[in-house]
Image 1 (cartoon, helix red, strand yellow):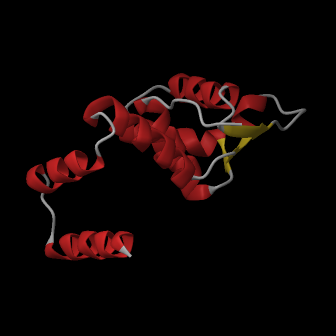
Image 2: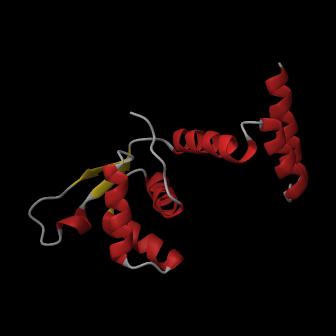
Length: 129
């Protein structure tokens, strides 16, 4: 199974799920609503979409009055897998697949700290080998 496109709103929900790895809908709502101002129903809809896309797995707790609040979500893909797929898509769409142009853009327009520059140089040196 491959990673499907994740919308900006779905990324917000996924970051919460990845941070916990196993989390109830109620707990996702408790974290996302104050940060975004969205309604709980919006967060529930996003969770449902992510399940339908095959990005999240849901375990429903039966016999509860509000079953959807007690559902527990776990990611089916790691953060790194999703980032990799989406960054390749971004690279193709915006920079025509030219990684050097992408890096040059972010180095010129980014506010990199000396530590980040050092890490970037380290990664480029590792790539050369």
